[in-house]
Length: 434
Image (tube, rainbow, N blue to C red; front, side, top):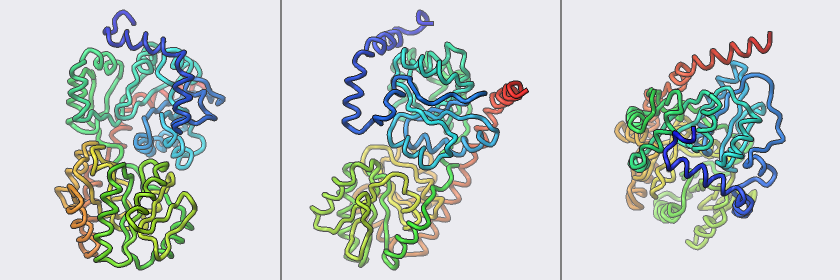
């Protein structure tokens, strides 16, 4: 196999092997930055204390929180077939989400560093029967070694962004040698499908975006009741999954809006919870009263901005407010997924940078299901209009619900495409139990 690979991949394989002695230094640095779990660091080397269960196993891999959550409904359907699930991801936050929101029989592992030695250990131990890679987290050694073991691989919810596509086209031979190892690529949109085909995927089907079929996030009813009782009667805006550079704009918008809407409460939920204290300091420097959830503080009558720097509680805050600003969109991050908020009845406002969910936001904006604000002045205008009008909020919510319903169905189309593989697994399960 190695001799047939393009020079770029042969070089990558050699370099990733040679870098193994440097792994302890890399791990030490990542631990210091809070990017690794010290109790599970062996998983990054392909080592684990978990035992592989008997029978066929489907391995699902996603980069981080968004991809992991996108797989939730699919995982539930596979569990209903009594198929064992191994779920891998690469971030501490995604591991926390799995522990909080997924059934305990789902085996989660950190994906190994992409060294041939570590990948081989991982595959030797888990021996998956089918591999499903979510979106575009394509690690060369992981894919090439899986293909060498004749492991069937399917790219699901495939996405090739407008940014990534031209970069990959410049190294067509490299990406083609990776993508051709997949049996099928199930793409989110016709545009994604065309890009994957151009880059060398031999069999591409448009199935839609699994993130449109995700269930609404849960919320602890006691915590929700407590927050509702403390904020009753106050106008509330939730700024979800915010990124650096956005909080300053949101704080300024709050100051302006509070002059027109007395008692206004803005809830800021940073995308990365460890940014809670810096966000709190920004609010304090602006002369506003901030309360920090990670300190077990609750909003009181004097709280202007509630910094909700905890993991896995977005469902709680989506239920608290009818108006949600989706973060990652006022800065060039690409926007966050609005579907969960929409399913809980929110009116959505977002910035101009939504290239991670282009089709979704275009459909929402064109039907009145969401509103775009390019900068602070427009953000104040859009939020102010929604705060002023219950009818406007209801119309937006209804329009966005229709869009989600019309664009949905990816889960069923994905399962249909996977049916030949799932049938084979059921036959293997029957033989194993005979």
